[in-house]
Image (tube, rainbow, N blue to C red):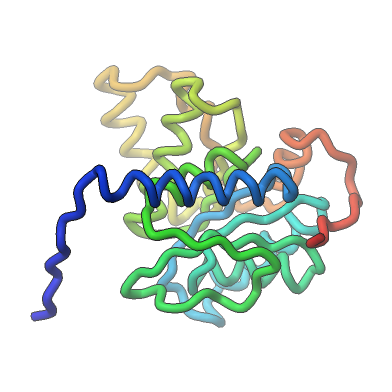
Length: 223
């Protein structure tokens, strides 16, 4: 069995690095501007239908003239970065070193690097005007539920939170309705924070509305 032990680092040791990473990201996004974050699994291989979908979504975001922000790793993060990059847009990677993510993907116009999930996730949420969520595992679920919580509690401005893939996400949404809503743990209007769809044109319209931009805007290019 692999040795999964991790040495505990005290909060006092972590905080300076976290602050530094968030500051570096804020300085970068001061010039980049708000973008659209795309979340999804690192484990989906090239050639999978979800990978092709990620490419298409990244390209669509770039074609709106908006920066596309992904995790910088393999799988669907790479697919989204690749779509934006190959469309001539601004393709941002918020990279972190993990056992399954040992290298940055090569489809990034701007690469930021993080040691801690805390500062990485905060950088997604501070600099996004919409969230597009492709199929994924625990990390993707962590990101989507944090996005929902931040918007629900008004800690972040209202923003579209779009789950792409009706077949993939419908079981989760059934559980949310049957358990969380039925037991009074969320309010009925909280469900309005989330859209589940396979319609890429609908996704584009929601992002356009959030960004208040006109169709056919030129892709955002790196400076």
